[in-house]
Amino acid sequence: MEYIANIIYGLAGTLQVLYHLYMLVIIGSVILSWVNADPYNMLVRTIRSCTDPVFTKIRQNIPYVMMGGLDLSPLVLILILQFANYAVIENLFLLASRMR
Image (tube, rainbow, N blue to C red; front, side, top):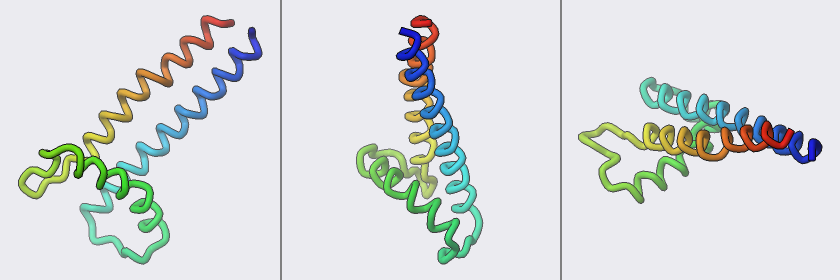
C-alpha cells in the first residue's frame, strides 16, 4: 500500500506545483493589464494565451463579472482554484498520509 501512497503523494505534489505556477501566471496577467506591455513580446503572448481563454469563459458564464469597467474574472478564477486546491490537492495529501 505504501507504493500507492507514494504515487498519490507525488501526484498531489505535482498538482500543487502546477497550482502555484498558474496562480503566478494569473497575477502576471493582472499586472500586465495595468501596464502598457508590448503585445508582441513572447512572454506577454504566452501569459495571455494561458489566461485569456479561461477569463473569457468566466466572463461568458458569470453575468456580473464586469462591473463598471473593472474585470473581476481573475478574482473569480483565483477563488475557483483556491477551492480546488482545498477540495482536491489537500485531500490527496491527506489520503496519502493515511495510507502510510
